[in-house]
Image 1 (cartoon, one colour):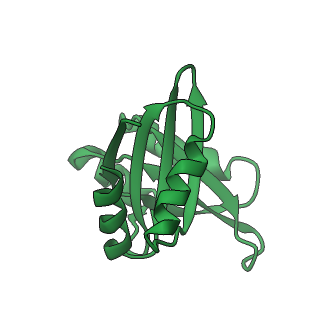
Image 2: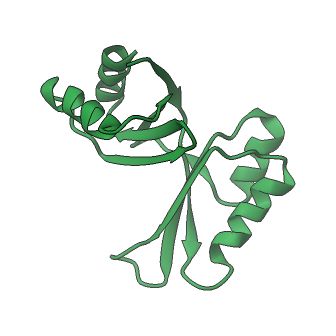
Length: 138
C-alpha cells in the first residue's frame, strides 16, 4: 500500500461551549487566508462551558499572527502525522496494526475518505513516537 506520510504541526485553541464559539476561532483563520486541511473540535469534559479546537496547517507569518491573536498555539504535547492513500477497506486497521506491532501508542486518530482517497491524521504523545511512526509508515 502506497502511503504519502507527512509531519504536521497541530495548532489548538480553547473555545467557549456556546453557539458561535467555534465559528469565531475559524473566522479569524479564514480572514487570514488559512486553508485548513483538518479541524476537529470537542467539549472539555473537565471544564464545563469550554471546548478545544485542533487545526492544521497554519503557514506563513500572516496566518501565524492571526492564529496567535485568536488564541491558537502550536501544540507542544501532541505530534501529528498526515497520511494520504488510496481508500481501501481495512486501511485504518492496517495502519493501526502496523503501529501496534511496533509498540507505538496512538493519542488519537481521525480519518475520512472522499471518493477514492483517504486522509488519516494520527496524533502521538511524543516526538519519538511520531518519528518512529513516520519512519515505519514512510
